[in-house]
Amino acid sequence: MIKTDILIIGAGPTGLFAVFEAGLLQLKCHLIDALPQAGGQCSEIYPKKPIYDIPGFPEVLAGDLVDNLMKQIEPFQPGFTLGERAETIEKLDDGSFVVTTNKGTKHQAPIVAIAGGLGSFEPRKPLLDNLRKYEDNGVAYMIKDPEVYRNKRVVIAGGGDSALDWSIFLADVASEVTLVHRRNEFRGALDSVEKVQQLKNEGKINLITPAEIVGLHGEDTLEAVSVRKTTNPDEVVTLEVDNFVPLFGLSPKLGPIADWGLEIEKNAIKVDTFDYQTNVPGIYAIGDVNTYPGKLKLILCGFHEATLMCQSAYQRIYPDKKYVMKYTTVGGVTGFDGSKKEAPKAVVKSIN
Amino acid sequence: MSDIKIKITDRDGVAHEVDAPTDMNMNLMEVVRSYELAPEGTIGICGGMAMCASCQCYILSDHELPEKSDDEEAMLAEAFNVKENSRLGCQLHISEEMDGLEVELAPEEL
Image 1 (cartoon, rainbow over the protein chains, first blue to last red):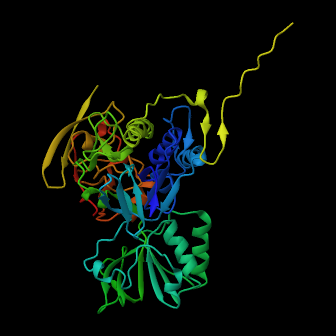
Image 2 (image 1 turned 30 degrees about the vertical axis):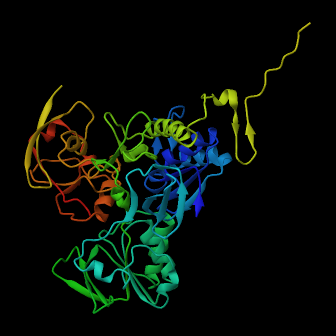
Image 3 (image 1 turned 90 degrees about the vertical axis):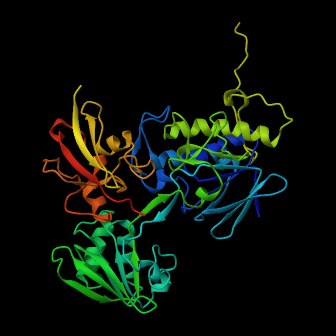
């Protein structure tokens, strides 16, 4: 069981900054995120896009903002459970919460702060009637262990980096790799596109474009797929395969959090703007995942919400302690790692 | 200040004729959101970067619209329920030439 003071669900910019504000109050944080890396949308969707409305940054790339936040919170030694989705929450008799992920990792904390953004990122699934039947029976939406595909006939669908990269990687592992994409053009790193071209020329990747998978076949496990060329819609080709890996990117879903007994409005969690607490005392929601009159889904608003949430969390954890907010220019930043940052003292020296 | 009329058929098949301002730097996705013709969180998820297809719509009238950018083309190539007349609402900047435009929102991806 992982124990902490504030359990933050979602490691996007708002969740990361909450670690800093909590750290100033000597509260420890642990973050859970369904993605394999921190940063949320900033890292997953638009790392190379500039943001212009972060106070003090005339322009900052989303990926750089995440790097900066990670550096800023480093002294507070946050824990991370990445690549796992928060699934269930349970309230114990002592008032603390236990959050369990889809992989069974348990976390306990007196405070839970949901900074879940738009939800957890789930693979986008193609619209095929019997898709579900073959899930884990030949169809997978992400490649965890490439060895599964050794000497198998694999068809990959998609036109982005992951489709390109996995086609390249599996060309050496699988017995047959077919890449199907709805267009002739691919959206990916130039080297990857060129590498696929080269492997295609060498006959190591079978490229079918512009085309799409329109049917799945097989008794219990996947045995074949139907491919339709967009240029010749009447002709459907059947391709014998062992595995089908649709790689159409990820899309966010509110997911299991929606069933935690929290008040939901417009696909977001309702909070009190006094401290961004939900209808369940001890559970807060900050950043894009919450809603209240006048809500704006901006990173800078998430930072503010995270700050007020931490103050309230502190009062919940230490109801008897008196606290006066201290400026970092006055108090400096004392990390849990023993580091201390503070403003240099002015020199007092007489001039004769 | 000038408004144009746009006819938007929502995901339940209900048609709405709405006024859209041409002078507020708005795109079609934002117009749909401003009139709440699709629930919040089901449209414009990426905020208008052509990085999701939640604002996909079908163009029903024969208006001449600006060409698709590479980003829009690429996203539509990965989206589902795509038709010949598919566009991403977030990439359609409201302009006077769009007066009388008729569109239908594509189904939500589940």
